[in-house]
Image 1 (tube, rainbow, N blue to C red):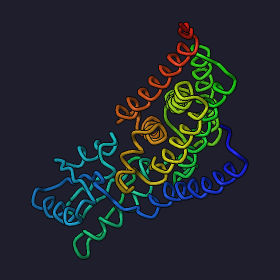
Image 2 (cartoon, rainbow, N blue to C red):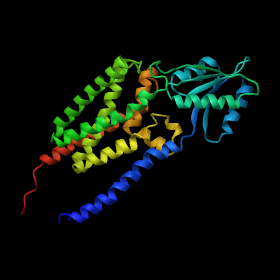
Image 3 (cartoon, one colour):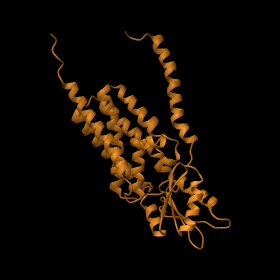
Image 4 (cartoon, rainbow, N blue to C red):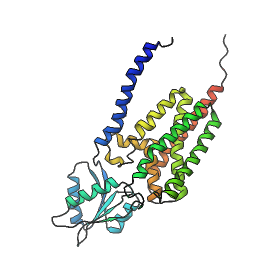
Length: 319
């Protein structure tokens, strides 16, 4: 039975406030609860001094996850390999903080404040940016702002192949082609024109394209399985949850749990992590993000192919 105009009016009246409340929760809650939660931090230097500094950080219950290193080269390598966000190197002339603003400018600033507060009275903390951001994007704003456009591109691609009634291999081929072109176009803009990315050009294009493919395939896959309502479900998951939970503007370890963890399981968060790694860290620490994006893309494409086969299957003959 078709819904009456009165029922449709009532549905809209109730649905809009629910969506607004969900959006405010998804975007405002993580932003309002930014704080360090098991942020990986290195400490290197003489055993006695290192233990004292480590103890001071451990007093901040749950804020930092301290990693011990033998010397300054080992701590520096850990920062460059994206194992830790920064490292405190204890030397006779005073402590030095090695930071990686390219991993998160917010965390780099937080570490400066934390180390200054934990340093012995009168000690001057020297700060060295081991992995800085490009001079054209010193605050990392451009990269953080790229998460929403990538999400929108993926959702649009998934919606278009669905609404244009592309099925099976045609749908999968269209999504892969569109994602490839989006990756190339976005890299041409961000790397070649704006200069906010400075890693391997093709690795950056691959990271951007794979992110769009994972989002687009997920949206189209849901639509292939449950109908056009899958577009809405996919958009809600990728934009309303994936975008604010990605940690792009801060870091996953600064978001309240389980937002930080969930964000890295979704394509926007995994794509942001992957892009940072290939753009600024020579491809280090990419394994988990690559696996996450590949799983979303693979499952989405599989759903598209299965959905197409189900639609082509003949209906059972009636007795």
